[in-house]
Length: 296
Image (cartoon, rainbow, N blue to C red; front, side, top):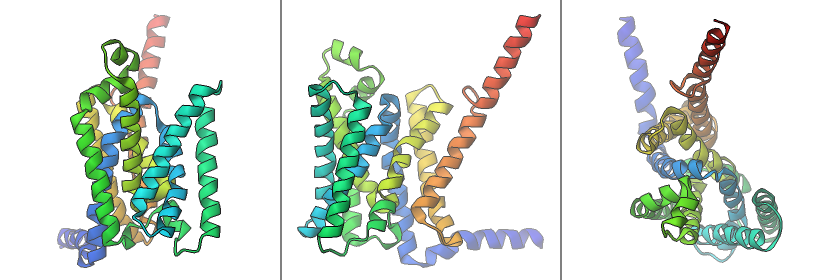
């Protein structure tokens, strides 16, 4: 009897949110965004571009405000300013003695601050909280279409150039030596990065999107040395966190984007501790074994 009751309660836990159309919509949109972010996350992790993703995510704020003010799709404005920020970073880096991390910090804070100024000065119905933290439960049909278009373009570009992008991210010097146009690869990766941020904007928002772009790939990187397995692990962890994070947000009545990222971070902590080859426990055990051998 108790087993039947537990099974019934568990079944109700999964089926209850499905009675509401907006929640079903939020679940599959979150899963799609999780898929797109996970695929790109593997390349970003190999390239070491987590800070670049943070820069672009903050730089899209003025683009969103301008797009709403001009009554055009916010994705257009967000992508324009996001890609413009990357061009500005590349130009400043090439023409000054500053290192890339300093340039990124200057550009993304400047763009973000400019966006905050526009939010306060341009009359609009923009909710800054939703821009920063997402609002997948209230996403409109138009925003879903923009998310799908941005995500599909990202996946298609990565699929078509996956081998070149992988070589560029793993060893750009070798890629250049064999004749690959690394400059083109640089801007291709930046373009899909900006598109992915646009796709994830409504789901987790600007502040949390960087976690969606870095954490899945990091989980896969800790658990596998092979890129294809890293990609599979990244996608599974990201989609799982997106779906169950949405469920948790409903049952616990908390932020959807926050729930997704917290769950994803929890999976990262598990991987960091228990990874069979690079986990903390294995590293400590290996260290103790080596010390024991030295004593003998």
